[in-house]
Picture (cartoon, helix red, strand yellow):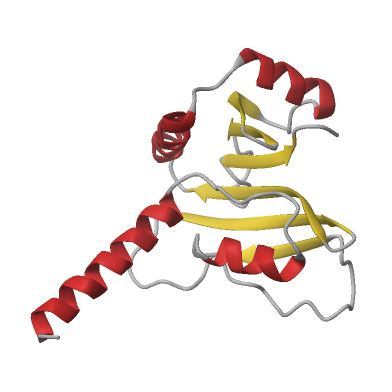
Length: 173
């Protein structure tokens, strides 16, 4: 392979990974702990520490993997397990500027809508099941094959709080 071809292939792979990291989470519920770690890694979230059976095994934090350059936001994923199976997945995004957070939230809605738009039915089901998180400014819900997806634009009350929450929960409780 010529050097130019190698560079083009590397750029294409990096570009695909960046697009996936920026897109909505498309991780199936029901994965094992290790399969969940592999799935969220494709979105540039790394395991904080290997699951070793010590501590709370019902939740696992995946911070954003280190990346070079200037960042306007910070993100992390929290996986919730029942036994060794994924039953809920949350991605939190913290943005320094409210207008960037709103633009990102709209981008996530647009990208998620390519497989079907938000629905009032999904919204009603999600609200009936768990209500709303604190400081919700606006929200939409989607129904996916096996999950309800809530996408929330939040109003942070401090710089450490998230501005966006994307959450996948089982379609049936």
